[in-house]
Image (cartoon, rainbow, N blue to C red; front, side, top):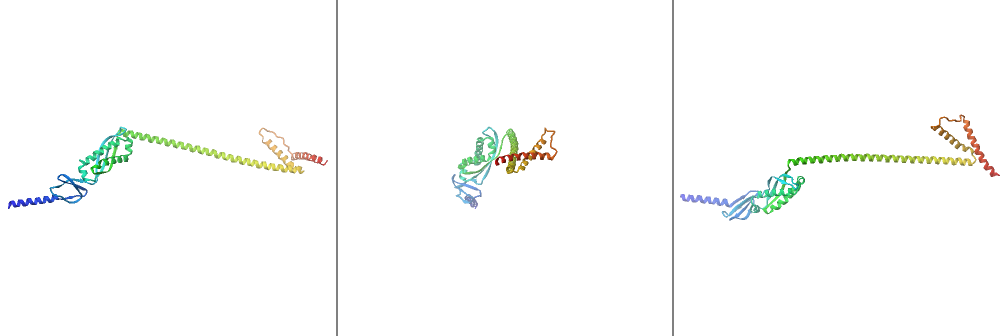
Length: 311
C-alpha cells in the first residue's frame, strides 16, 4: 500500500510538471524564443501557447517595448581642441526577438557603447561653436549612424537626444566675454548707423530747403520779369499812343512824357544820399511854364515840316 501511494504521488507530480512545461503564457509587450534541444525553432507572441514538454523550452524572454538608455557623461574633444562633457539618452525597440537574442550579447550594453563611441566621433568632427548651436544636426547624425549599425541586431533606434554639452568653466567665461564684446560692437554699430542716418536726414532736409528756396527765387524772378515786361509793354503802348497823338497834331500829348520825366528826375534827386540841398521851383506856374515852353518848341517843330510840304 505504501509503495502504491508513493508511485501515485510521483505520477501526479510528473503530470503536473508535464502540464506546466507544456503550457506557456506570454505577457503583452514580450516575445519568447523557443529552443528544441538547444536550437532556436520559433518565436511566440503574447498569449497562451503549448509546447512539447521536455523537448521544447523557452530560450529568451525579450522585451519588445520601446526602451530608454541613459548615456553617461563623457569628455569629448572637439575639432578645435576644446574639451566638453556630453551626455544623452537613446530610445530603441526590439523588432526581431530572435536576432536581439542570438546576434548580440548584452544588447543594452552594446547599444550604449556604440552610442558613446559615435558621440565622440560626431562631436570630434565639429568645432565648439557648431557643437553648441547645431544640436539637431548632432542628433540626426547620431541616429543615422547608430540605427544603421544596430539593424543586424533586430532593433530600431527611434531617437537619440543629446541632453547636455558642458564646456569647461574657463571656456564658458571666455565665451561670455566674447558675447559681451560682440554685443558692445553691435551696439556701437547701431549708434553709428543712427548718427549716420540722422546726418543723412539733416543733409536731405537742408538740400530740400535749398531746392525750395531756389525754386521760390526762380518763381519770384519769373514774376518780376513778367511784371517788368508788362510794364514795358504798357509804357511802349503809352509811348505809341502819345507818338500817334503828336503825329496827328496834338502837341499837348507831349506834356505827359515831359511831366513824367520831370517828376521822376525830381524824385531821384530827392532820394539821393549825397544830396543835402535842392533848389526847386516853389510856384506851380513855373512847372507849368516849363511844360508850356517845351510844348511850344514841339509845336514849332511840327509846323516847319508842314510849311515845307505846302510850299
